[in-house]
Length: 315
Ligand code: TXA
Ligand code: MG
Image 1 (tube, rainbow, N blue to C red):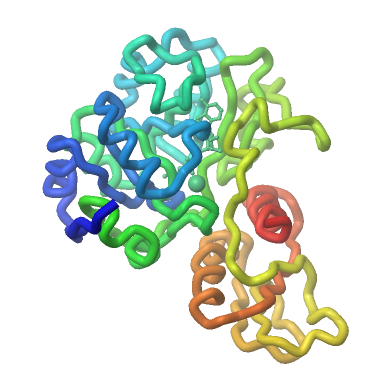
Image 2 (tube, rainbow, N blue to C red; image 1 turned 180 degrees about the horizontal axis):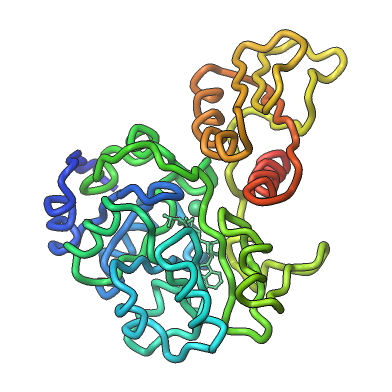
């Protein structure tokens, strides 16, 4: 694919103009930056997969600027789906529901379901409303790389491959949305995120988690693919492995012992989560060979954080 010039702007209306003309635009949300195209423009949706190098069997999430747009996308809503929308939209929750006929197969990788989310960010909502149509958007990174939490990280991966970057602040949460499959009974948590299982069960008590060892791949195609990986090796611990003499970095919540080229100490699990993916990228830029990630208790955002760290350690 030949390089195109990627326009940078802070104006949501200018960014929406590129969508309306059939382009692809990266935009900030409260979780991570997404790479968007109109859900009803199949040529534009195809450009998302090309720019990211994303496998075509991995479905996209539709982003809406107004709760009323759910009915353009969903064939039917269960009572549980309705409750989740009422409590968590706008916010870092994606619900998977049976898709309407209007949604093209390319957006959902041929599945008969679609993920829907309404981001809770002023700039994202202004952009989505200016687009006037639901926007499918995966995270705006090269496939397999950590999701971008700054517009600079988007530029690093996608400059020359996409039409526009809507420049906002670094994202608040820094980890991708919680995904709940509401097309099955009872609903199933497919991906952990800032909305915790505890908060979900306060609204829908029977939500199920994938049991360990249960094949998640058939349920969430994204689980099949490599994710969140920095080039450096990731180790879940607090100190350097015995005998390690290379360039190592540390991220966690207490000051580490030992010699690290880079150290990031967060004051809370929220701050740790918000910093993680950008820290991975910084380490890659600095030629770090080993990233030591301190484990945290798996409550609240800590469960999502440990999920991403484990996947990075496996990648
Ligand atoms: O926070 C987020 O969700 C970000 C921002 C940009 O909104 N988006 C994001 O998209 O993380 P992506 O494509 O990187 O991850 C979407 C995940 C994948 O694991 C995908 O397999 C799953 O959601 N997913 C999407 N549609 C699905 C469906 N119909 N059924 C099951 N899983 C689905
Ligand atoms: Mg992604």
